[in-house]
Image: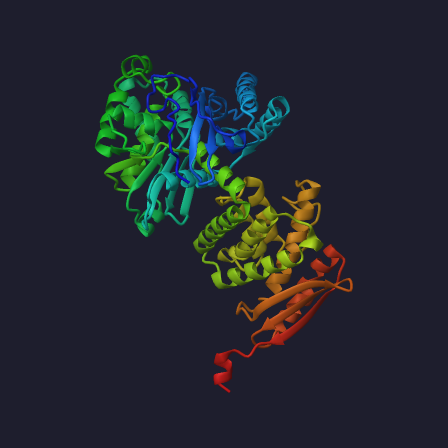
Length: 547
């Protein structure tokens, strides 16, 4: 899906502050979608018209200078009442505009400021109640996924791997990507607003000449991730309003698609220039927006640090970000839901395999348990009544249920839970990740109890979801008890008030049958139906030739 036009939102020309860009394009309302990015430094939204071919045209774009991170990235870690009012007002205005345009499909995502604030949930609920907008709090890995979607549509990534860095007000997401997906990603709490807040608290007595040096010391906490040496990216790509403004300051000329190339040497010159100017001088002499002039130097230092770690000579600036990713993802879902679901599954599959390999998991066993779990889920849909989203949770849980063995086999189900809940997985929300962690927790030993940590905090609907998916996962895991993939095919049906599993197998399933008698009890009690096993050995060519 390739955009036919690009909206700068006053990022390429920072002297313009907050005005709305509109394009008078005669398009049907049914083709319009909207994306809202509730960031730490500003709230942005775009309205786009999507064609049947997948191209989109930006009809309207606006950036509202509401700095949520000003409150959150302090010791209080809370949104104050004035800031919440400003956020509600901005989103109410956006909702009114969306309604005026007759847009039925939108997606609104909140990033690190809302994600980390102690009263972020209260803010999200207030937005829903007062503006009618459903605001989704996304993880750093989901930010990285959305940026990847936007980047791969703006740039031809070819068959190479690239380092991407998306710097916002609260965090920076560093990833290794290709046209096929995200191979590795980390989110670091080193955003421009957060860094500015930390320095404002610490810089008492520090004069302006020492400020850039102090920034560099803060940014130096970023170390060279193993992924850079492992994947050897062929280039470095950066997204975010600050890198767009830095490219503009350096005089980088955009190509026909609006893509600029910023030499790292020029970036370092700009850092020196910015460090020598006061805030007022940056606004007056350089024409920076008032809400950009303070955060641009911290951002520049972080970009420079990552470029240094990557040994990059230049940074590619595609002028896209989270909001463009939101538009593309939403449009893809609306155009072809089935294909979109398949792509999301592949993205999640790639993410969980990458995480599993980090903890040296038995990949073949994870693959087999995932295959059997999804077969059970699909064939018993009428019995469990779960949704497509739940299928992806089961996929992730099936792949990752044993990663806790990296720590210790004893109690590895609890270790798996800990590792998963402290990880980020592109395509899964923080709530989703918590549910996946619980699936791993309950793939063996004790069944869910209302007193268990993590499970006790869930709403009743999510408890039911965890219990049903864990029951399915236990059956699939039992059917690969020896980790040798003896079950070649599975057919599951409800017959005479029981669930019959007809298996095509390679060799004897003596140990698997024993495991199923133990681990199948949770399935039988959850669905109130006994399990029956029917096996039919398959004589493979290799086996026949050895007779």
